Length: 475
Ligand code: ADP
Image 1 (spheres, helix red, strand yellow):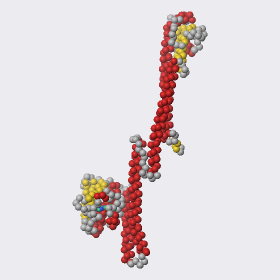
Image 2 (cartoon, rainbow, N blue to C red):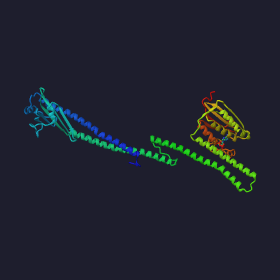
Image 3 (cartoon, rainbow, N blue to C red):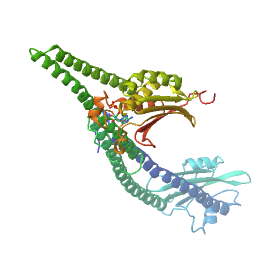
Image 4 (cartoon, protein in one colour):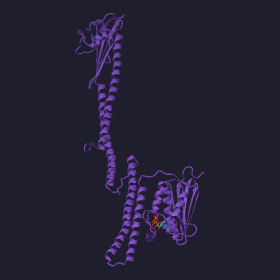
């Protein structure tokens, strides 16, 4: 089947056409070369046979000083089988002295054959041709007596037997070629159709995915290269689908998160506007609430912006950042909040704990983890942070004796907008994005982050591993 697309030839057509051209070339070769070789073989055997026949005559006539019709007739009288169709003996003028043919005997006439002329001038002559019905051969040789040319022997053969053999060989070859040709063409059409069907399946799947049908997969049949491409495409689409689902969930979660404070602001402003004689203390209370909602909005949008930046490829190049000074600054910043909650903050940092990141990254990681630890701590709790060097990595541990994280939530708390207790998180001013920012920052810097329950009693331990900067760890 030939399929043409808008000026472009289909792959199937190209394959089919190239196969057919190759097959035709092979068949032409198959039909011509063996025939040519066989023809040449017959020509060669004819040459030998003709010369042998002529040699027999030459031997019979040796010893004659002059050739006459009589002495040649006498010398060749007993000759029964010459091995050729016709035999002539001429004198030096080319006059025929002996003719082996009974009917239409040419004795006395002149033999005007090129081969005879060549033989009379001293050269052996041979000519053979094949005309699809017979092999026609002519051969001539000079007859010499004491270095004198005294005549010529001419032999002629018309062989239909060998020609028939060659013809039947040719016919057989043609039949075999035709059968091979048909089989190969059928097989190549079948193969090219299979091949193009696989490709068009794949194309269809690619088009569907491009149109947004992320659940569409290509059929993977066999283990050839096309099946491998289809498998690669499927795993690519799997990832695309996962990313797309995450993106959709993120957009819907983000809009929901933004909608809640906005709805609160709307409600509070409506109440102020609709209540005619609202006392100043209540107005103040409402406006304070509006301010808090606005603050929440700005925290969410800041966190969203940070996550978007982490998603994009633009990333500040890392340098050597000692953890100690950054940790000290974060403890100072969170000191007030901790004091308010009566949570004690303590820290220790190995001076050799120098990470390969930016100061902003380290600050963000420490701030988010320690702020959470304080937020989810109970009154009179503690938060202890240690930065040390372990196996060529900087390990930061943030430990608290707060409410802890239920085992079933541990795998999810790094997801965007995931909260163990939504109400509590909102009450303490959480956006549900803090740990996602920590995870994305750590991963982008080639590190890992994990959480586990505190070994001794209630609470949790967050462990961050970051690459050690060169020069760090060996001072
Ligand atoms: P949030 O802004 O709500 O704190 P995070 O992404 O920082 O969002 O944290 C996700 C959730 O993980 C929190 O809502 C909280 O339930 C839980 N969590 C985080 N840190 C702690 C901790 N130190 N102790 C107990 N729970 C925590």
